[in-house]
Length: 353
Image (tube, rainbow, N blue to C red; front, side):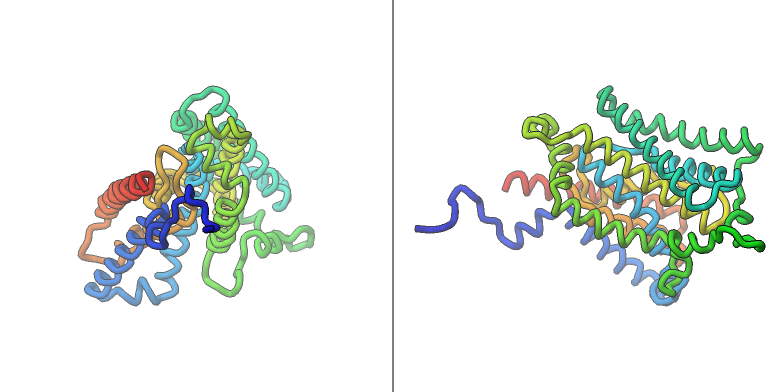
């Protein structure tokens, strides 16, 4: 007697690979890399982009910056929600952190307080979405305006300036006391591992591993898929859908906070325009990476690959002098449309078996 349950459909290796949501982004990344390798070879800038440390740093750091936001965006999209406020929250976090430093709060407590503020903001957004039933697109669009406006309001009201410089507060004091450079080494990976990358690259690598494992191996990861796939059925089997979604909005806000604080620590200043349009870049990376707009389908790895596609196309076009830089937006638009069509096709194939 066979030990295999005949009611369970056997899935082959090829079919299992085709069912992966990040498949489209794998092909997209291969196409983008090959395309820019060819174009930079023709223009004589191949080494400047692909082997020169400064060239590599340009697109790797952009991929990490967008990728950190795309992690939050992809989790929310899998859960059936959007967050358009993440770009503005970078500016709000940066300004809040800078103001705390300017008013004498030590670096470490200022970092902690800024994360508490942004986590609470994410909590408020999540509660409004799940309690009112309003589309998260509308709610977070409102907070996009509110967060960026509140950041400018704070700095203009308290200091009568929009851009805040905190370089004096981040220098080691001559007479002793807390040395902010210690925090730089611990939190901002100052000269981390002897590599020429900013801190977001290291956080990006850590977050990708942690979140990918959580999504695939934990009960909470299953809850995220269930919350986006069929919330009613998920609630019926005991999934705390509301709490899952609220926690994801809080995570998204904290990821924006991380980038806002790191930007201030590495540049020594906070700009109210920080993170402008990054929410769209993050969502684009998630869509290119295979996340379905209807929820219940997608992966963090796909969003990561989408971030690299975005970064290589964005920075690579600067290394190709015979192509106008404005064509990047055309290329990104075509990538999003192509990825959406491919993801829909693959998802339909999976659903039909």
